Length: 428
Image (cartoon, rainbow, N blue to C red; front, top):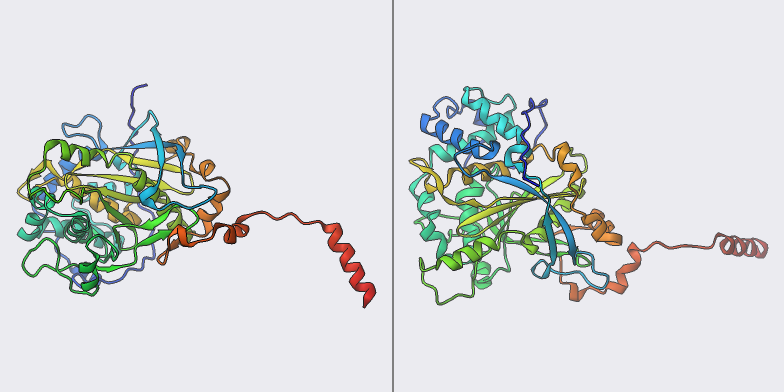
C-alpha cells in the first residue's frame, strides 16, 4: 500500500495560557515587548524559513520531505517478569504502519506562528512571542563560534557526551525557551565530568571563552522494575537528547570517518531500541507529572554527528512516532547557517519548544496504536504511577520479590474476616 501523508489546516491558537518559566541569564522575557527582532527580520531569514517550512508540511517539495511514521511494537523486554532492564539492554522490535504524516502535522501551533510571521504578524501570546524570538535571534545573531562548532569536521572529532554537550550548547539549548540543561554526570570520561561538576564549565567545542549553559547532574529516569537508566542530556527537563557515536574507535583521527562508518552510525538512529525505550519511559514520566495537560506527545532526539531522528510517544493514546532522518548539514544551507541544514534548525526549534508549539496527535493517528499497553501487561501500572526522575538505581540492587506485592492484586475471604470479628466481639 502506497504511503500517504496527511496535511491538516492550521487551527487558530487558543486563549492565553498561564506559563511559568525559569528566567534565562542571557535573555530577559520581561523585555520581549521591546524586542525589535520581529520588525528587523532580514529578508534572507524569512526566505530561508519559508523554504525550510515546505519540507515539514508539503509532499510535492523540491526538498526531501520530513515525515513521521507510526510504529507498532512486536515484542519488547519492557515488562519482564523477573527484572527491569536498563536502557542500554532494552529490546524493542517494531514494524512500520503503511501511513506516514508530514512532520508539521503535530506542530500546527508552531507552523501557524511561522506562517503568520511571513505576514509580519507577531503572536498575541507573550510566551509564544518569546519562543519565536529565540529562533529569530539565533538565526540573526548566529556567531562564528556557533557555526564553527556545528561544522561537520568538528562534530566528527567528538566523543559521545562531548557531541551531546556541543549540540545542546550551540543548537538545542539556544533555541529552547530556557537554555538550561543537565548532562549525565556518570558519562564516559566521568573523571573530567566530576572535576567540572559545577557551573561555568568550558564547552567541549574548544571555542575561546565558550562555556556550557548547563551542568553535570543526575539524568536517570524510569523504575528499577521496568526500563530505566541514564540519558545523555535533559534539555530544560522537557526533551531528551541522546547521541550515538562509536567511542571505542580510538584509532580514528578527526575527520577520518569512512563512508561506511558514517552510514552505520546514521542508520543506528533508525528504530533504535534504546531510544524507543527512553522515549516511552519519558512520556509516562511527563504524563505522571502533568496530568492536567491536553496532549501527552513527548519527544526524544537521537543524534549522531551526521543526522538526527526525532521519536515521539503519546502515553495516553499509546502512539509511537519516528521521524525520517534529518541531516545536520547540507540540503538547505546558505549565508545564515553556513553548512548547517536550516531544516534541522527549524525542527530543533519546534521540538525543544514542543510544550508551546505541539498540538499532540491528530485523530487519524489514533488508529495506529503502538501496542505498548498490551506488551506492558501487569507492569503498565508501574509505568503509569511509579516512574521516577533522578536517583534511579540498578535493577541488580532491587529485589523483585520484595516489591512485587505492591503491584499484585490481593483476594481476601470476607467470610473468614467476619467470623474472626464475631469471635473478637464475643470475647469482649
